[in-house]
Image (cartoon, rainbow, N blue to C red; front, side, top):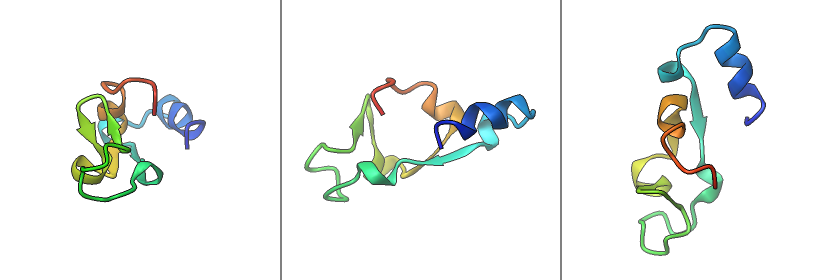
Length: 62
C-alpha cells in the first residue's frame, strides 16, 4: 500500500479520495491497549480506513 499511494497521487487522484486501511495496527479494538495509537488518532476508534489527506497529518511512525 505504501508504494501505491504516491502512484495514485501522480495519476491525479485527490488525496481526499485515496483510501488506506491501517487495520493491522489494531489489537483490542476499543482503544484501551494503545497499540493502535498514532499521534492523536486511534485506528480502532477513528479508522481503520483513512484518506491520504488524513495520513499526511499523522506522524510517520505508522
